[in-house]
Length: 410
Ligand SMILES: Cc1ncc(COP(=O)(O)O)c(C=O)c1O
Image 1 (spheres, rainbow, N blue to C red):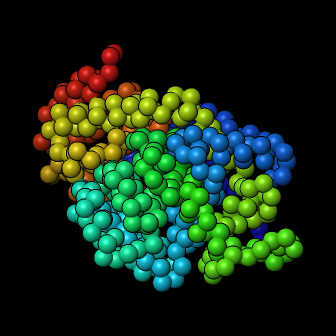
Image 2 (cartoon, rainbow, N blue to C red):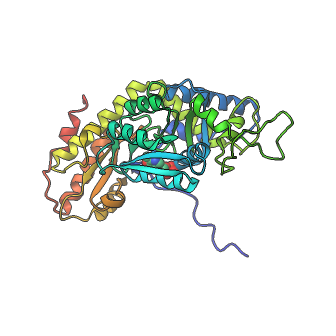
Image 3 (tube, helix red, strand yellow):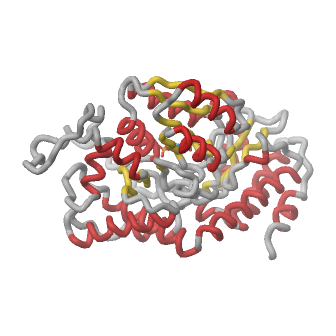
């Protein structure tokens, strides 16, 4: 077969990504990705893997030995935890407050777990009393929750849930993809047993790597299911006492061995994504956790205040809003998709739509990672205002940018 076209040289437009993620990566992350490829057992590479483990322990505020990357997008991290911990028939409790709570249910159901949900109105978070009551009745093996559900922009408080799980001896897992690095996340203090995330939001990298951590207790549960592949299994390897994990790629028992001292082969670590994850963590730790979260809060508050000053209404219970993304009702009389398209084509700015019951009702505007900056906030507000005025939306012109500027000293 002859090649019909080679198409053009790849030259994607430079956009300002102000949606719920992905966002523009830090320039240093782009530089890191372009580093030379090396072999997976090159001591330099295994050294980088050890460094990544150490960096993410610091970033996640944990001493967990089992801190590593799952190769794949954030969903890969979620699936790895759920398939590795939950055996068919195991019970899992899941508060559902938005699309990503449904995703946890979907994955757990496919794993064969028995799922019980606590259904919360979108725009609210789950009260701890409901979790404790459900744990007492249902006696799950695991509580699986989302910290920042990007679909609603709400941030679930976790500390009390950790206490409850600890008291009832329930494993506590959290998907922190959208909240990590923009909101506090204290893995050990909040007694989390498993956390997974992605790079493409406040960590300021591309999607494609899922940092994750497991408590010793959770690692022990998973290692009971360890069954090493034929072809690499040696005499000194022993199998776990419980059923093998129903996935090879997401088998965290094998992935732990790959990242562990034996470096037992599993996949081929995604070198360029490891470089990216390493640089994301270095940027975070250099700036300092408190400063990074404060920068996200400042940008998020400025954006929210600017939108309100324009006369728009914010979505959800603002007491629980994530620092890094805001939901805002699309004003009456305008077509939300047309406004988004024009923002993209005329200004090169992307903002997000939403899912399910919120689709067509709210936009989601993110201020994350590299884009949690004054200039990004002001440019987005100015551009949105001008397009809304063009389409004769009923807004108050001239207020948004000056209001947002009050959050900054210049
Ligand atoms: C809270 C949350 N969890 C999981 C995901 C899935 O991430 P990915 O698309 O990287 O698999 C997302 C993506 O937006 C998310 O916001």
